[in-house]
Length: 180
Image (cartoon, rainbow, N blue to C red; front, side, top):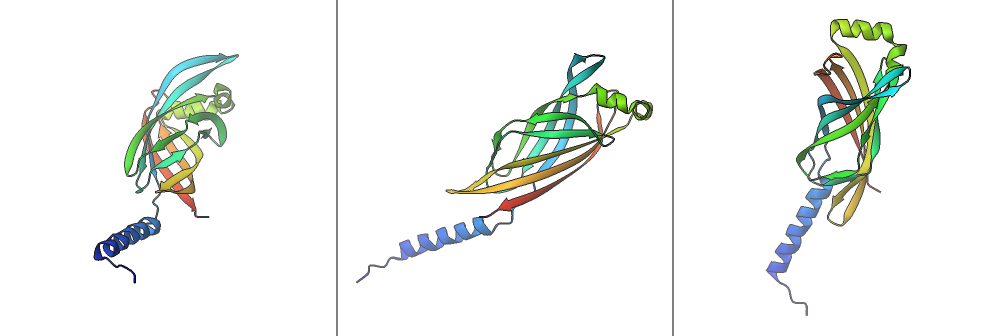
């Protein structure tokens, strides 16, 4: 005969319910917000000078699971041309948390020179539009189970080209979760 216990039954039911809730919880897209752009140095790139900057980005993980991701590169565009890249270092983020990332970037003055007329008009208006894209792949852990994910982020940012103040921005992220 099998010994049956209400305690074991309740613990088993609670565990099954918690596991089902974690697995069935719909993942939410993370959010990204560019806080600031700071010029750190200028590098001579004859006949022009490239700018090294640090992008300060506020990232929110609204999900109930922590994530881990390897390093990747963000592409920064001006007028449809690649202006520079920013390095996103490997890292992790706890569940339901916010984090500030500092992304070093290098912006090519040669690309800006190709758009000199438009750059001068932007400086006169004190508004320059930059676009950026990045794909971040990683693993979200639920107990012993690791789920791969990919987040594609597109940013449309208006900055003051004189002081590099962020004037306006629109950020879109699309999360893709791989179950298999």
